[in-house]
Image (cartoon, rainbow, N blue to C red):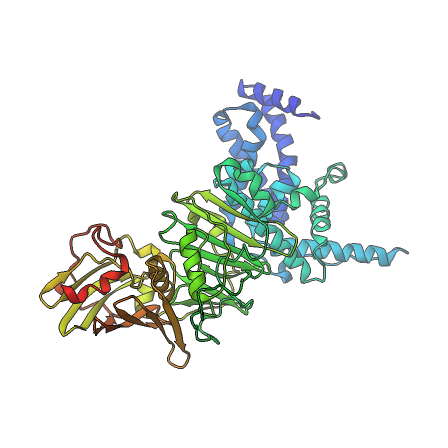
Length: 584
């Protein structure tokens, strides 16, 4: 049986009840599965157990095989599920330490000992590096590099999208390259290591001789590989210059480091834009679960490891191999306004005028839900792409954290941010009229449906409850309050200035509409508005108080009848409702 036709005949006869053919098929399957499973587990005893269990499962459910030509994929799926079931919760994490790898360097007694020693040492490095990978990373490398499976086939086996498999393969390559680098092997060693591992784990000399890993297969990654994978189902726009890649207006390259060394942001001296800003090298991922203009979740990958990740539950920042979970959404360390690839040309142009520096950005106009955009900024001369995909990527591997499980984590969130939402009160006065209000605010996307945002204001004897949250904190939407306010202002073409007091940790955004100034004081750590001060035609101040504990909340916070939460009323003027408070 040297070709697929022979196996196909065996499968067809076995499906008709020929037990001898089924037994012959099982023996052939043992050899093939042993090599496959060994590469996934790197444990001899475990491999034998899983192969045996897979063969028994094959006998048990053979009648469920619908297509004879799908036999090997079907059998691989059985074995793959056995492996994944074995690892359970450890599937996403490294499971074997270097000391447990069981790879002793072989003794070298031949005259050619030096050459053999180098070869043996290289083998040990490769095996140890593969041991250190997460099981799912070994799985996708095995299926792609040694079984030659298409991304669509791997996706079917792993029960995820092709896009997810592509990104998982990218991660696996990066993880292996990182492990190899710990042993002094450079970037060019990846292909050699994969080839050597394939030959070392082959079941026979003949099988080892047939192992080959092409450079084309290993080069399929985030930028080049995804283009072919998503085809006409997504929008792909080529970006030709580094300045075009500027998703934001960052001028630092040391990552997003919270409030450290934030300069005061002064408005441009004139309306003329004087500078352009390039995006630092790395990948920037933006996911809009409900489409552009709605909530966004983000992550940045730089130098082969993720620096920060913001998902539906929290905001994480990895610095010096310590993960910090913080109150606040992502923000730029230089206090420049965060830009999104889905920003329209008018918004982008106005923000550039206010900040006095141009950010030329290719506009991704797609408004569909489940929109993923990846901005890849690489070395000079390499191609870069925007890519969009309509899929629920939060269920996929490529938008989950893959930091090692043992990485230290520091949760610095206060009680209300750990809860994910809270109530707040508003007190103050506008043009001599007393203002009182109450509301509820979710801090993260995962709480925004059940604990939806609402606010009711009473100005004098008038009730204002159709204002929505325009011009206020909307952290569950994915941007820091300071960016939410400034972007809301820019949409109304209201000029603004930004100031920051490092000692107090408070920032001020001064809006300059025609009727006077509106000054926001923002707690940068808590990511909320402390107060709003009005000067000019409208005079007054609103004070915000956020409740850390909610155990003794009374009926005053009974939620109102729900309408289109978070959306400005149809007769509203966007965030300009704030300047209209005095007329109520």
